[in-house]
Length: 313
Image (tube, rainbow, N blue to C red; front, side, top):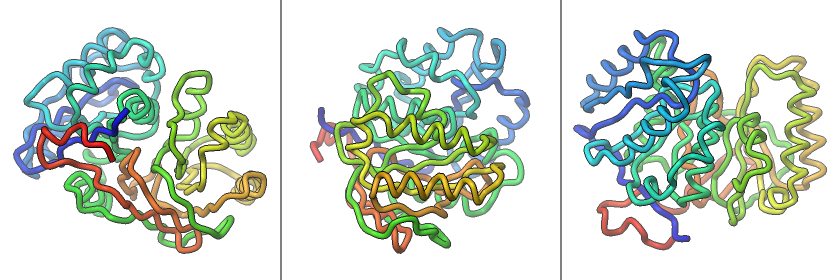
């Protein structure tokens, strides 16, 4: 299957804010994000699933969320889909998605946390490059950090060439090549038992929050008990594991795992549930330097016109 690249974002494009995970508890936040994006020069559509919920999830039902996802991709006026928030719900959708709709209507698809499930599954099923990125509900509504939207829009405008840790914590020196792939650790682990692992070498990136150290240990162990993934991962970039104590135990767990895997690894990347975060294209070829804490993007992740959509790279 050939890799698919979306068109880059430009002013005047239409963005849909789509809720397919946790329910939106404060619709005012979505309205604030809508205003923020409009002030930047974009048109904005807010999905109906932002305004309804069932239990702790967005939309009236799973089918409602599936239909909203399909409509967003099918809508020719929509250039980019920004997932509203994380939470839980995307795992319930993946066996019901019509992947042909996404493959035949490629566009920017962005989010993080629980949206990791969709970022990785879309890439696996269609080879469409997706984006691990901030989201409207938490990042573009209140207390907007200047760095986060700068990284976000630079990436969506094809200006990002490198992702760098401010103060890299080196677990094992070395360099590696592979596609950039990963996201929220607990969301990735939830995919175990499904066909979610790319058939390419991987530079894995990970983050999480509010998990005790023993659960981080358990999830890393479970993930690398998957032999196919263990063989594919050639390097690991660790983001932030927020609200996890004691941190020294977490470092011990990471060091143990890296020693077992014997692959380049470093931490300190702005991949996080926190306010200051980088945007990462998922599925793009990269060079990872664990010593300098840099991930260099070595292939284009956008196209200039639709006729190039199925260019093999």
